Length: 320
Image 1 (spheres, rainbow, N blue to C red):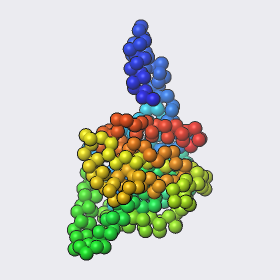
Image 2 (image 1 turned 180 degrees about the horizontal axis):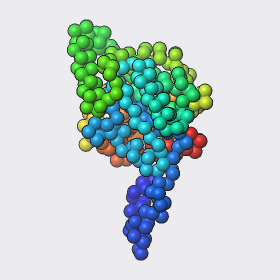
Image 3 (image 1 turned 120 degrees about the vertical axis):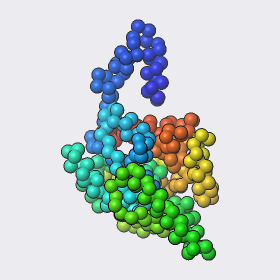
Image 4 (image 1 turned 30 degrees about the vertical axis):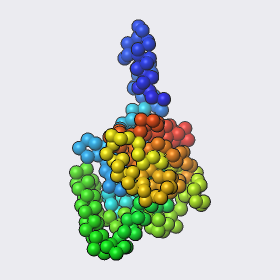
């Protein structure tokens, strides 16, 4: 339900009530319904080439504010834009330890998008005492066909000559994002490390060490609870969702590497499965899943912000 539209309808139909009075009745005096007020803080972890914000533009566009308005305590983290899952996980772990100290809460609810999925899984595996739940959004737990395609190119006839140039360009992009976002990481960008973590072979090695929450079948669900930690996941399967969004062209092209498998442009539907699969076919592409590009998402699907609000409420109802 779109609360803003409902509120407008109430305002128009209230007659003698002013809109302010209607809003007060709807939200309560504090302005918060408590709908998203989880027991433990929500910690957001970005994907490859991600950030917290750059000049006021959030990676998680509009999502943290929407969660906070109805009671959630939300922390947005930033780790290396390009690195292995383990290296990113160690950086995230240090930030989780700080958040636990600052918040006074003993645990956190981790939500990771894309490469943030394996990153958050690492933290939960090595420090389960600090984690109440892990939720992955469009995460390539079993690797990405797009990453496999890039790996094959790097090993092809022109790979030895072209790969160092391309790696340098991508590392430069990661360094630029880190600089303009004021990122805390002082590590050199590691595009090859990201590629090795996100292709099928690298993901399989990571999963052998950290299998918590992963399905044992090709496209099933994983264990809902491991070591007292709840595991959830969701993803989209529509690379093209909005003709006004310039990122759709890139994601639509990348989707061709999946050879007909349902995907969000960068991650296959089955690869996104972990723990309780809330839904794996939202009409969203890989960037829609974090409400990018700046809210230019599908006009014919539940908007991403609502999905995050619903999940926060799910965590709240689970006592998390």
